[in-house]
Amino acid sequence: MKIKITKIGVSLLLFLTLLLPNTIVMAAENEETNWINMSSMSTPRQDFQTEVIDGKIYAIGGRNTSTLSSVEVYNPVNNTWTTLASMSNPRYGFNTEVINGKIYAIGGQIDVSTGITSVEVYDPPNDSWTTLASMSTPRRACRTEVIGGKIYVVGGQDITYLSSVEVYDPANNTWTTLASMSKPRIYHELEVIDGKIYVIGGGIDSTPCTVEVYDLSSNIWTTLAPMHSFRSYFQTEVINGEIYAMGSTTFKGFEVYDPTNNTWKILQKMLDDRRDFQTEVINDKIYAIGGDSRSTVEVYDLTNNTWSALASMSAPRGNFQTEVVNGKIYAIGGRSGSSSLSSMEAYTVASSPSTTKLKVVLEVNEKLQLSIGNNLNNNTSVTWTSSNTSIASVNENGVVTALATGNAIITISDENGDTESINILVVENADTYRLAMDLQTGNTSRLTVDDYTNTTPVTWTTSDSSVATITNAGRVTAVNAGLTLITATDVDKNQIGQAYVRVRA
Image (cartoon, rainbow, N blue to C red; front, top):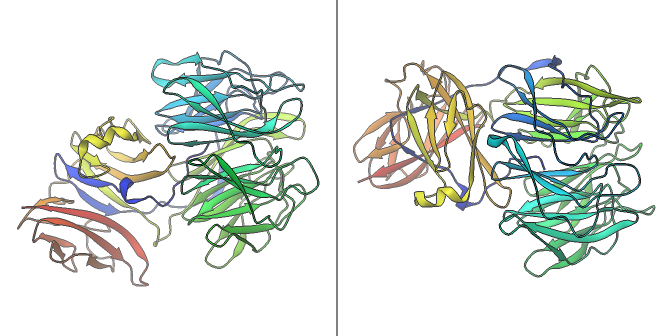
């Protein structure tokens, strides 16, 4: 499962508590309008899986002329792939999930005949795989999601197509069979909204456009409104609590599901029909990439319901993978014609003024305490990761340590798969520019959205001026104990970013 940036509930809201002072600035990345070839994997792969941990991309298993158990990892900092310990079982057409920084490889197949029940887990610090309890049913081309620190496995195929569902609990290494779906499904999609699992499309007949939802508390599947169109080998994404479904075999159709009223709405068609393609969401825009015989790329803008063509990849790709690291989309491996690919290329997405993130600025060797609430003891209930551990590390309690100049993104993920992140900029000297903010009553500090020149037109507002005030120049004054949210908007009233200020008496 790819990690998706979603709206987070109050319990996952990041608070900043400083061990040493810091400041926040805003910066945008330049867009590279073409795909750039990066280092290739050591092994050509299709039907494989990828996961991102600490800003590194892990490529796992798959097949070329044979089924693979090999694993390698890509480091974007130095553009290199490194071979890691192999899985105990070769597999393709399988699934992976990440829980607490470990990669779980689930099911799949070794040859064309049957699925397998095998499950194993990879521990990156030890570079080792451990065999776990097997599933009750062999599965390939199934779908998985993580909720509450457990892995839910839905449908797929063994000798027959499957409607069955089971869940894995890493705490006790056990699988439990759950209520089955109303129909067997293969090449379907799963999404999680408000802790419920939505299964979309796929199927074994000519009308795989049905949709149903699973309620974990009642162990019941409920049939929902069907999509307007047949879909298999397609993609879904969730934005603002709605499910976007796109593509299928020789099909450009695109529609969106609103769970609040159980309806599907037809949207503007894609520019290309796509099958076995990939999608990524960045800044609430959907990027549709490649597919069988396709090297083309397009992007969907929700604000005006339009698809726009982007630069094409250097090679057509199907059965490949994509990952996003630091605003770059990496297209990895796959198949072009009958040949498996080892190549990888990257596309940099430009940040728009309305979605650019504020950055916390630290000096080298400074420490920053992040928290998911007022009780620091709750920090160990989530997983903390850094996109670049050579720039800034983060421990299991949310303490960030600045190590070298540069940028890093600190991400937290909870047991439901929800995530939140904060951008870190490490500099040599930030003495004059301190933010944010854990202030004593009467103290002052400063926010900036440029390189400390204060020339960018911006409007600053505070959600509670009785807690802290802010001037047009970004100077914050702590007034009374409490918590307030500082918001920066540009001349077009687009939100640039937000930062929390906590004031102590």
